[in-house]
Image 1 (spheres, rainbow, N blue to C red):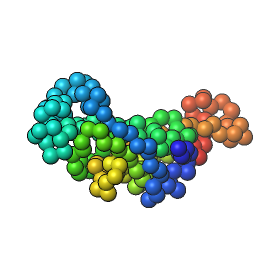
Image 2 (image 1 turned 180 degrees about the vertical axis):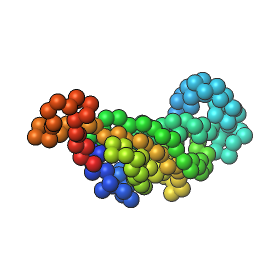
Image 3 (image 1 turned 90 degrees about the vertical axis):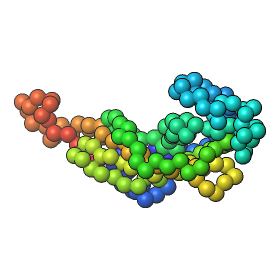
Length: 176
């Protein structure tokens, strides 16, 4: 796992940050996802019918199950220091490239594509994510994830403080 101090994040633009571990997606996990979402299409939950009617002979993993695993994989790859908080701002260009049979192993590759600064505290980082299937050269899913990072406020040294100002108005050093 890589830990990135938010003040140094710009050094990672255009670079692959890392690769998650392989995770097998079992029929049990697919069935639990079907229960949680109410999506009981037979291609996901009826293993007997899938054996005879689907080309792979196996049920197919829900695409939104794959998408829901992104935070788990992301957290295996990178953590951030120097943050007050981070917010998920959404995703763009989500593409499910191919159906994936239950029992497949998947992982992601994570790359920082760009940073947009909004003010002296906050920035939005866009991460390009490619989900891979073990044993295949073709991606399963591609997307751009946008996260808003707000840097932790660091108090300025006492020499910079002005007597008589409330804490709310004292200068701060952000280190960005």
